[in-house]
Image 1 (spheres, rainbow, N blue to C red):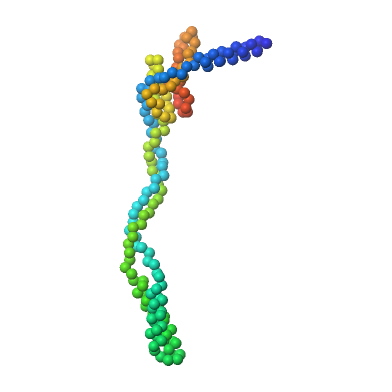
Image 2 (cartoon, one colour):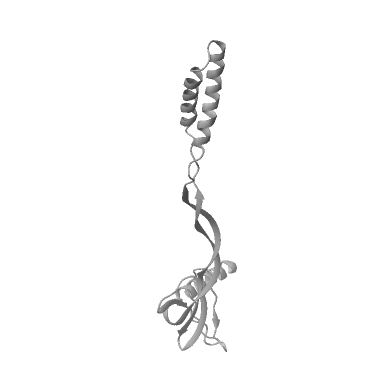
Length: 180
């Protein structure tokens, strides 16, 4: 029975302590960004002059073959005519292929792009100095709090020597309190 009574008294006192906590506003004196260099992928491009690839249509070889065959067919008779025609076809194809391979080279602009890691400054937190009840405090927050800061205040037992109230900003990750 005594244990049950002690648990009820402890639970009631804990509830009273939580309900005595108050949400108030503190004056922000400064909020200084904490900046770190972070690697960011960035596309870097350059323009280069290059020779355009030449398209081989085969038209020259075809026309040369036909023209060589016609010219070769005019010479000789019988088996000699067949050899002259074959010789004309081969020479016409080779000669016309050489002519088609001699066009003036064309230059073109070609864009070459790569991804590179570039260091850029990024704000990762804010060192915040604030004032509450005539005292100054410092905390690091993930975002700029603006002109005022919401703090939770829990009164302490004033009967104990050296006891005082210290405000705590609401928890939003990565901050700590200490006197300035």
